[in-house]
Amino acid sequence: MEFLLNYGITPIMLLGAYITGTILERRHLKSLLLLESGSRDVLAVTIEDIPPEWEVESSELVMGNVVISQDYFKRVAARIKGIFGGNIRVLEPLLERARREALIRMKGVAHARGYKTIINVRIETSTLASSRGNGKSTAGVEILAYGTAITIREEWRALPGT
Amino acid sequence: MIISNTQEIPGKKITEFYGVVSGSTVRAKHIGRDIMASLKNVVGGELVGYTELLTEARGEAMRRMSRQAEETGANAIVNVRFATSSVAQGAAELFAYGTAVTVE
Image 1: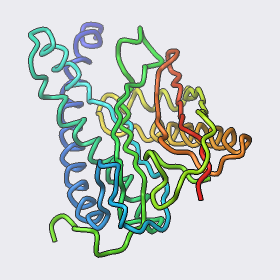
Image 2 (image 1 turned 135 degrees about the vertical axis):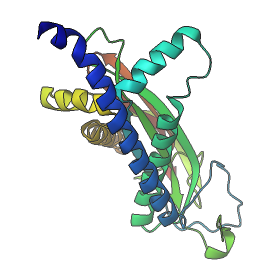
Image 3 (image 1 turned 180 degrees about the vertical axis):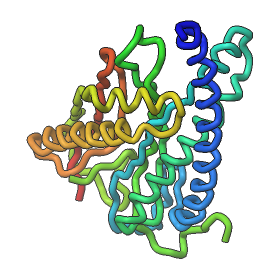
């Protein structure tokens, strides 16, 4: 029994984390596709200067954030891969998903307030320190997307995918 | 208070500069949220409690920045930047800063 407790839990946790992590990832990707198609009428650009002939009526800072964490299986896999160096591919999809989610939330805020264009979009990434342990493990990664939402006349906007 | 992360407020003209204004908060999560988050850490995915916490904290930092700008007599803040740093274990500092200006 003691042996099981000591050496059984880790593989069970790994397997459980792998299965639930994969299911959650697939579900998230599916919802992202749906949400992205819904937020397509908000145009977000990283340029700051807009042509002077665009008559801006109002502007406001909008932002969207998400804190996301990696599942246990992938953390272990990344640590092993980290010994050899190179591309740690298991970590990439998570950050990509988080960025897409943050952008969608930012667009959602802009849409709810009646804006259809966001300029000067910036995306920032920061790690949150864990409150337990030695601080080496991170509690999560925060992605923040922010920009200035503006209202401009319809004809200046060229929408992607239209 | 008009807040923007662009150099100028789109569609408006800056008439006066008041200098840098900033606001910050240091927040920690209570133990219940920490425990929930560490459980969620096993399966991965979004840590909703932390997302909300940071949204609230950033809002507070921005309110403090706005208040400072109001005190100087400005009506807008341009070129706003955000910075997040983990000052202690389990606590994060959210910092917002920008330039207070008058626009018309």
